[in-house]
Amino acid sequence: MIINHPLLGPRDSQEFIYLGDANLIERPDWQAANAVETFHDYLYLRDNPAGEHRELWYHEQGDRSWLVVTRNTVTHEISKVELARDVARSKGRSK
Amino acid sequence: MPDHSLAPLLPLGGATPRRDTFAGLTITENPDVAIASVACRMGRDADLAKAAAALFGTALPVPGQMVAKGDWALFWTGPGQWMATAPFATHEDISRIVKAGLGDTASVTEQTDAWVRFDIDGARAPDMFERLCILDTRRMAAGSANRTMIEHLGTFVLCHRAGEAFSVLGPRSAAASLHHAHVAAAKSAI
Image 1 (cartoon, each protein chain N blue to C red):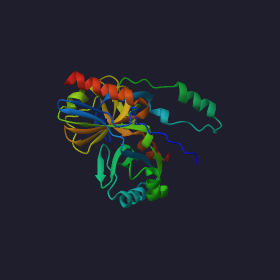
Image 2: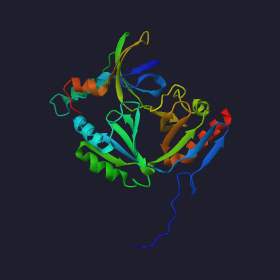
Image 3: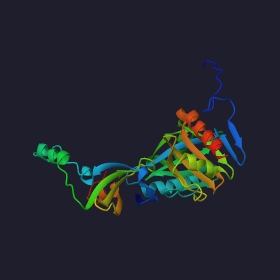
Image 4: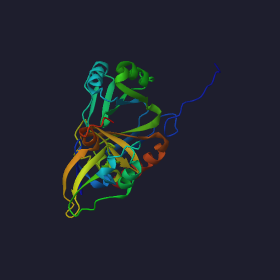
């Protein structure tokens, strides 16, 4: 499987480490009144689609950037690769 | 000041750089490099680019690339991160020199003693690399710089001349293991 790194071009997937659902970068506000509930959902509830899935990959043997990869879990086709940093910033987060 | 007369040791433990010669390939320990890492501070990309151009006399390299100008050689290590290298004899305090030039646009960390550098020369270099790492060194163009895994160690492979002149930077604490891997691969290939 080849992951088309947004900065470095096509790279073999064995250079990467898989973390999980891309929603893991949407960490809830721990000070919110319903923090217990939102953290329960954040930790335990995952969609398990047969089809397009957004997931986090880490380029451990390369430039050590985090990527959001859109992969079809049925065909393993990768349709989109973004820097996780850009995804977070596009949602108004600065870190 | 106490008068210590301590003899400095090179990464492989010798007093002079280790050199291994094969037909069409030499592996040379190169201790004459001072290294500092540069990490851009948040939102200061444009300021850093300006300060770096003034300090190094060249723009910071783009992803996967290395640039050299005068004493300086810079290579990209990650988004917003670079390594700056210069001759050890004239830039022993490299982090102070770089910090003075870049100010608060970037965080600078001394790296000189963290790395061992092997210079790989000769037309058989790709034959050795294909046994060591996943990089396609036959297709690496001059001026490309990539991080890869060699002998389970995170290393940087710099290409100076396509197919025949490379440098490998790896953790100094594992210098002997990295050296052994190179020699073993070279012996197996040549």
